[in-house]
Amino acid sequence: MLKRKIEKRLTEWKNMKDRKPLIIKGCRQCGKTFSVLDFAKKNYKHVVYLNFFENPDYASVFAGSLEVDHIVMMLSALLGGNAVFEAGETVLVLDEIQDCPDARTALKFFRLDGRYDVIGTGSLLGVKGYGKEPKSIPVGSETVVDMYPMDFEEFLWANGIEEPIIELLKKNLEEETPVPEALHHRMRQLILQYTVVGGMPEVVQEFVDTKQMDKVLGIQRDIIRSYEEDMVKYAEKKDKSRIKECFQSIPKQLSKENKKFQYSVVKKGSTSSKYEGSLQWIEDAGIISRCYNLSITELPLDGNAEKDTFKVYMKDCGLFVSMLEDGTQYDILQGNLYGYKGAIFENLVADIFAKMGRKLYYFRKDSGLEVDFVIRYKKECTLVEVKAATGNAKSTKTILRHPEKYHVHSAVKLGDYNIGRSGQILTLPLYMAFLLREF
Image (cartoon, rainbow, N blue to C red):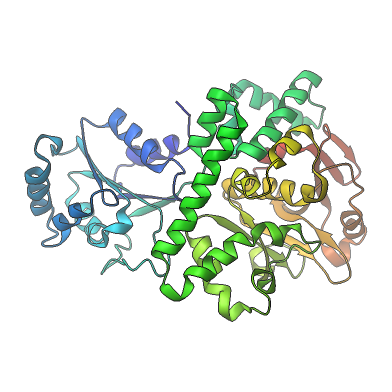
């Protein structure tokens, strides 16, 4: 069974004295249902499970009175012995809660009542055009937690890399000493494998079990198709084709020299006014991350972000690679990346940073200065360059030479290296991006 970080978050919630109903929000097929049910079965005497997507009729339970005793009575009548309600011993799991807005409204009544815990999951919560909004969102009566596909550290656990090895890597980073060669070689293999596999749990499990990349790719493309079906099924009629066009343009957007998202690349002559809502739909569905350009490299980063100038990355790098032509997986695993190398490894680092909870920023000027990412690290504004092959990080060096202008004193260069330092630039292997944790 795949170990997930959400387990710790669920345990922390369960241990809170005055806990509110919990909503786990994330893209489809990122493992929400499995993780919640596994936790529920281990921590409660009774689990009452409703899936509103598979069984729309369950919504009728919440169509009348939202008084807790009434809901309990209706569920007991509907589910019989599968709905045992015992104060302090029962958890009600409401899967795909966005399909029953009245159930979400009911959370405030469960919060006030306090006898039973409630966990809801949602894939398209708040997505425009979904058409199912609660009459009253229970502000202050629910705790919302974002869940992502598996991150690189979870992928390492799935592949037998345990905590002592990760602690050793942390020690090497802190002391800026090279990683032992045998471990370095293994980690280089694993980061390339993660690049093509990504973190969708079904995909990772298939990879761990079989190592058959054709099966991995088949599952990934099925997931992509299911996303596209959601776009056609749930979006407003006028947006259906536009959302799909935006989504399918992502590989082309990232193959450009200037990776800024351009609506004219989606469709010739198109503008932000026509497609902006479509892109927002995809972001709200948890499929992509935006990376905003900074007007100046200075903390706080969010205060200096240019909201109309951004790059778009897939939230999961494995799904991004699956959108590229056949043979790309093989090329990555062999280290032969050709034209797409920058896009692939930038999306890899965007995946790692976004799943850590980081907002994404970069820095680009018309003068030609460009840095892939800018982060807060060790309480400083820090540049991050991503190199698919060896490179000289010219823009980074230019910025570091002018601290009075750019307010930056340090940089990290991620690539196919071991740990090293050259003045203000710390060189790290790509696989260490997930250890740059300090915000």
